[in-house]
Image 1: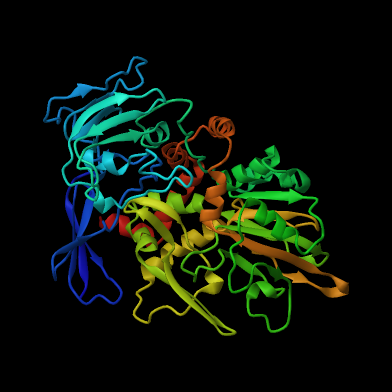
Image 2 (image 1 turned 90 degrees about the horizontal axis):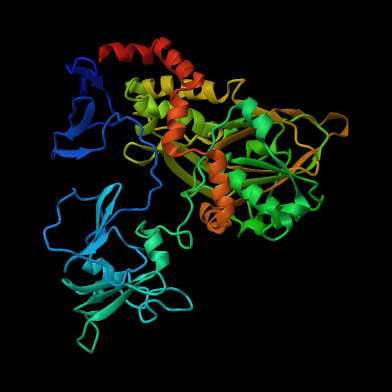
Length: 523
């Protein structure tokens, strides 16, 4: 049965009913909206799910707020129900915003009132009895925390942390007494309770979105020998560019089939796939992958049919004397974020979030499949990344009503393939490109192997956890310097995109689209 969307006009507040056809829908679904906010109701069971259309909110990189035993939102100012006391022995004024009662530690922050419950305090103890000094791992299980401990005292210690005295220890404790909890400076800084140069972490590096002109000017080519030096400036240049731009090159790489292994392992453990620890990209007969032919290969991401795709791809050029074969790159997240932000204005774009495309691989005894939306969310209303790999799509379900998705996907495809979006470069032997496989689409032009021409790239992958682990140890002074040079938050980036000529051009294209633009007038 078809469903309807009741969509509120941002200008008049009136409700309009818009047909909403869902593939394979077996129950009636209505979506009601007031003041531009939409929520879906399934009439069988009356369960609510994610809003059909939502205004994009950038991912927040703030430390999680702490409340009670777990994590939560800040409480309203003035909601403290018990008499509170300041932190004792705080002669240096390290904790002026903290107070405590029998049940909670409170912090008045710029975001509101944060609370951490006595149970959470006990679970977070950093003392040698509760955290192994060598491994840093817990020596007890969280269910061993008492249900209703009370805080007896909170005082600053000489090391810049807090000592919190509780009336109860772990349930399994034999002595029947309380426990002096240690909350060290590292823990307090992670929770944004302590702001100090010694313990605080700089904000994470934020992405810089690019088009062809920008990346032609700003893509860096870094010497291989300098990169391979431990903790060298060149090494951290590569790590920074991978996180900020998603693309960086090495030069003067030895013509050795193990060079790509050394490059990858200098960052962390390689991500092995069914292609092996490494793979060779060169034309061969009866190729099991279009990449192993001399044909044109459109912009895509690798291995979307796996549960967890590789994060970083590394390609080392061994030979490239063929005619053609230029490498192609495009910043998919730049286009994805703009389309995501335009959902509320152009409802059919929501199909790029809602409809999941099937990707599959079935060759030589290997079978993998997965489904992914073109625009993937971190949480409801939070853009995460793009998933796009047309050459490796499987067969889609026969009941898929793809009209809205097709119109929106064509806009995405045109945008990422536009001349001003695609960075084109013919790699030279001795060059190696490293790029973020989940942000930067890659492809290549067709090539001709006539007259003895060759084209041979050696490749490998790194997983996101491996890359993030190495990036975590970027020197703090460098992180702060890089952050100042970028001078952008996620909110700034989204505002920049929404105010850019590219964003306005995309809006005009959507408005003029006979399928997508028509849906605006129906609201």
